[in-house]
Structure formats: C-alpha cells, structure tokens
Length: 140
Image 1 (cartoon, one colour):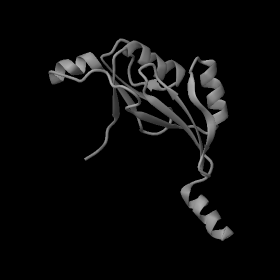
Image 2: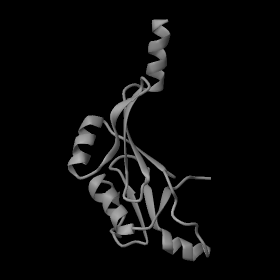
Image 3: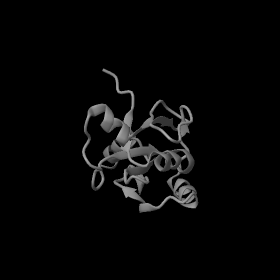
Image 4: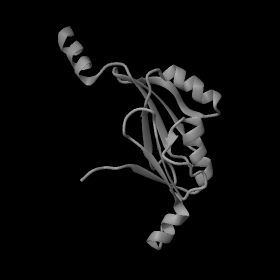
C-alpha cells in the first residue's frame, strides 16, 4: 500500500485553490482553478495536497455529509524560517490563528486556516529528534 496524497473536500474550490497556489505558493500539477480536482506541491519533496470539489464527490458517492464544523484536517508544512514565512504570508493576506511560538524544545510553529477552515501548521525544526535527545543525554 502506498499513500499518494491527502485530499481536502472543499465547497468553494476557486477560493481554496487560489489560497494554496497564490498565498502559500504551492505549485499546481496543472492549472485547474475551477476544479473539480487539483494537486499542488511545494518546491521540495514528493508530498502533495489535493483538492476535490465537495459537490462533485457527493455525486460520485451518492451522498456526502454536510460541511464539517470545526477543524477537521491539519495540513503541516515545514519551513526553514518561520518568522520570514509568517511575515510573507501575512503580507499576502493570510490570517493566522496563532502567531509563531515554541512547540516543545525541537520546533516552532504557527497556525492559519484556509478559506474552508482547514487548519494549516507551519513548522520550523530547531533540532532533529536525535540531536534533541543527544543534547539531553549529554546534560544529564
């Protein structure tokens, strides 16, 4: 079994597509601003986020529950400089629900949400698990 993508079911496809493409700067596999499907990736790695029009998927399945309430998905994106990413995305119009701050001693994170309310975590790694564990062992 191989995981190929995480797909978000969205109601306002053009708005969510533009957010991931224009605000977050992910690259579309092909231009599909009006849907019903798109796959977008960062410049590095093989990971991808796919968007699927919620109404189109409801037609495929014969039913689909009403839009979710509260946070139902968490997209995690690693950045090299969280403060620079925060400033750049804020300048692009992104609204953060939590500004950059520590998450334990190994990383810093900030949270924003896309136009459909899916939560996005930006994380900057300060130390790899092995480095953090090794430093703690050396201090003991």
